[in-house]
Length: 107
Image (cartoon, one colour):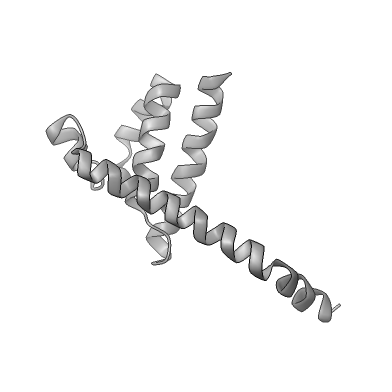
């Protein structure tokens, strides 16, 4: 059950990382590393698929070269992911009613 949740969270992180390449507001690399971590712990099949894809190779060069990620990068990645989710929750909390009112004003 835990491995399935890790794979699911890996795909969610991968999706957010891909969106991050298109939108400058969302950090890309932290989500791709979280996806790698989840696939690494969740499924060998998805880990191999993730490592063989050409899109992610440019972001995983340091991981492949050093066989690990330096501690400072891990800390920065976690801070980036947490900051993104805090910003998302803050926007949702403070602006949800206004967004709903705006949408329903046209209906």
